[in-house]
Image 1 (spheres, rainbow, N blue to C red):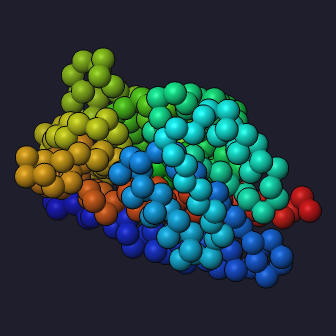
Image 2: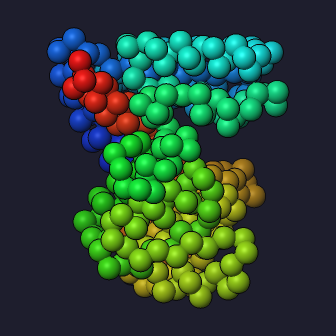
Length: 285
């Protein structure tokens, strides 16, 4: 068996075309969707991420406001700016790029964003809405993973899914989304003895720990779907995920590559969340 590669770039293009259509419809109604992106400091990786997000907005017809501040910006000043964006009816989503300078509390910043504009889905209230199955914003990376699994055409109902990783941004919300899709879910992490025992029973494995070769072919059930969220570099300096692609592709039925799998979907789901926020706001006018 050779796994079918799940093309995140192709799925992303398809979803962004749908976003562009919805954005055009909203704009025609006088409600152009808007996303504010804030970058504090000069972290090179953050600058690349923000540039990609702003470009994705431009390409999809979503109005974007990009605000860059020096690393010396005070926490109070940042919170004041967020409050102003919360009150701005032309802005439907607010994203503050992480990490922030050490003198700024990221939790305070995330909680300052209005829930209706928390398109990253990171706030405590957003997490609670997800857990309760209420209408809210799903964190972008797990949301993208669900779309990738959906693209295989395989129903998750009754399937056993294993999530490797328990972060608040990926692992925990990923498990909740899989539960909502009627999968039976096991969460594994650094304290799990014999990881392979669990993954060999899984119909779906989502690897999100940030350590390469965490999942190898001998740890995968034949025919399983494997989603690789990890971003690492191999000995040659090339990007790779948490999954040993060569050995796992010989066993799995579907597998996401790194790069070109989950990565493109994260920004795409940010656009989807922003559109949903704009559509909800338009319904309330």
